[in-house]
Image (cartoon, rainbow, N blue to C red):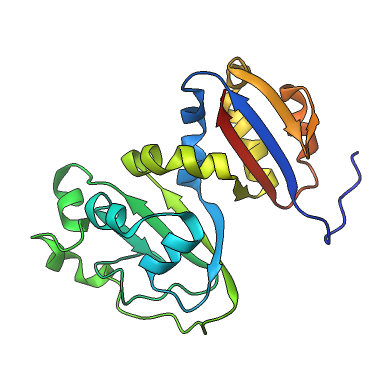
Length: 205
C-alpha cells in the first residue's frame, strides 16, 4: 500500500496531455463538482470571476440557470457565496423545466419555492472554498481553461471516474505526470488510494 502523504503536503498534482479534442472527455468531472477557492464576502459574480475566471459578461449572456446551495438564483450581484457553498451553472435547458429555471424568465414566478432568498454571512478578507458544478454548454465553454489551470477534486472521485471510463480513456493520452514525474497513465488510479484531494491538470497536446 502506498504510504499516505502528510496532511501538510500540497495535494498530488496529476497532469495529463491529451491529443486532439480528448480534453472534452473530462467535462463530466466538472458536472460532478470541483473545489474552487476565492475571497470571502464576495457576490456570486465576484466570486466566480476571482475563483474560477468566469467573466461577468459570460455569466450575464451565456449562463441561463444558476443554483446556489440548491436554490435558483436570479441576481448575481447581491447573493453572497459562503464557505462550503455549492454553485451550479448551466446554459439554457430545453422544455418547460428549462423555461421555469431560467433566470429572469417569463416563468420564473413558478419556481418561487426553490428560489434563493437568503444571503450568506461570510466576512470579507479570508479565503473560502466552494463546490462548482458546470453543465452542458457551460462545461464546454469554460472546461478547457479550468482543466488547463488545474481543478481540485477528491482523489476517490477521480479514481471512480477513471474506473467508469475504462481503458479507452488512455488511448488519447500522450503523456502523464504525477508531481512532475513522468508515469504510465494506467498507474494513476493506484496513486489515488490515500489522496483526499488532488489537483488534476488536463491540457491539449
